[in-house]
Amino acid sequence: MYHILYPLRSFLIVSGAETPDVMTADWVTVISRKPLLIGVSIAPGRKTHDLIKKEQAFVVSVPSTDMLPDVWTAGTKSGPAKTEQMNVTFTPSQQIAVPGIKEALANVECRVVDSPTYGDHTLFVAEVVGHTAGDAYDGTTPIRPERFLAHVGGNRFVSFAESEMRP
Amino acid sequence: MYHILYPLRSFLIVSGAETPDVMTADWVTVISRKPLLIGVSIAPGRKTHDLIKKEQAFVVSVPSTDMLPDVWTAGTKSGPAKTEQMNVTFTPSQQIAVPGIKEALANVECRVVDSPTYGDHTLFVAEVVGHTAGDAYDGTTPIRPERFLAHVGGNRFVSFAESEMRP
Image: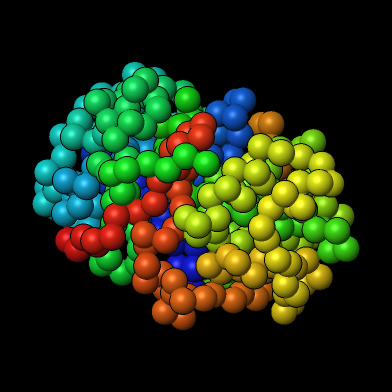
């Protein structure tokens, strides 16, 4: 019934330095403005969980609608062959050893500052220490919402409308 | 630069029992599946912050695109006259003393289980103890994404596309 808060954005979480892994996560939010902290909730037992625990860092990659097949693979498959099935190119980060994804709309480099357990998940609270953003943004402000991807539930995804609204 | 993770959904947070207050919050996510826990990050100094601290409960109301004027008022105004400027009707909740909003697409009743400080915000971690959902949902699954509201930044809002995508 957590889908009552959906659609939520789908993000790709890159973890690990030598052999990076990619997982899809919808449970991502901003927590603090200054310092800029974000929260990502991940279930223990996921490979990503172990890799973040080890590296104490991860990248939030922002997938485009074009990357839906990769988002699906990253969210439903597991194991070492997973990233080989995806059309992603790892690219070095500026501030951490975990790479970003070249094809993504943006890459947000995060260093873990706390990781409390809540219920059946670990909430990784992390400081944003670097970022890159492409042409879907003006600086770090989204200018092409229709290129961003959200998850409705199951295999249902949706992008944003092309026309914006103002109050 | 936190807008690099936007667009994010805009939610209305109802707090207080006798004289309810309403605030717009984008920093809302799911944290745990079982028990169902959500996280809402709110700055100290907001009236909502004090009311949640006092009541240890709040409602996440899901606004429709039609409610954009109210979302804007709730996000930019403060003080006792704020809710009078909004077209919202408070309706009793099932499990908590804080009411929901009749006009909202859904109301999610939450009881606080933890409230750590991270940076300049308090993260209210809360268990979902009740809910109501209207005709934008099949049960608790969204079926009409184009009726849901997201925030791009500043006074820019956007809904979701009418057509969904499947991998």
